[in-house]
Amino acid sequence: MIVFPIVFIEDFARQFTDQFPGLLNPLFTAFGVASITEEGFKLLAFMLLFWSSRDFNERFDGIVYAVFVSLGFAAIENIFYVYKGGYEIGLLRALTAVPAHALFGTVMGYHLANARFYPEKRNSQLLLAFLVPFTWHGLYDFLLMGKSEILLAIFIPVFIYFWVNSFKKMNELSDTSVFRNDFPAGSNDQSEETTDYEELGTRD
Image 1 (spheres, rainbow, N blue to C red):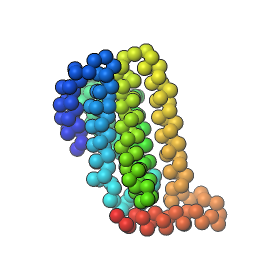
Image 2: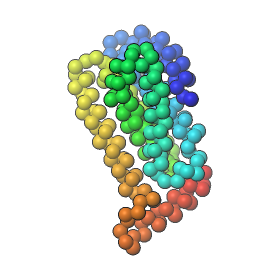
Image 3: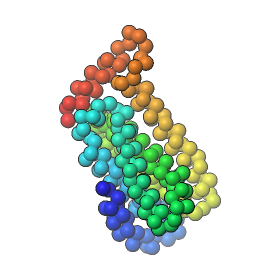
Image 4: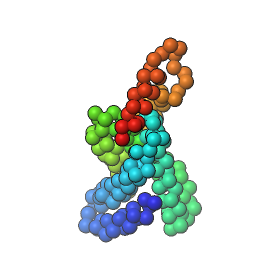
């Protein structure tokens, strides 16, 4: 659904890349063409498909739905790349770009979940739901598109940071899931949080 407008907008924006010399060229392509368009449309798809859904009834759902959108886009995008460059490109992207999209979706979903269930933080968390994956995606693309040994050396620890940070966010929301059944006996944490989520889930 979102792939076709993304392809159209990115093809249009690429017409301006020649105006940027040196490293400004991959910088513009990474942030001004790919990242802003793809993360923007993924956020739009999430808001249209899942934001008001009654099934969005706990914070971890934010990550589930955002990663679903991201991987759906990555799968279709991969088909385009395979069509243009062969299956070798598809295999390479399956090990790099596809997991990266999942990580971008994780951090987007984390902030969307906070926005959904903490109304007092909604505006700031909605902003972060776009800005953080936009920054990660743009940085990921720029470090690879720059075709510099220094940038590639920076890419490795940056990508590791993406993985570690994303898994921390998943663990945080998993550990506080209202559907976990391993809370200590007599604990009120689960029941209190479930009640809070149920009330918040019916407000929108």
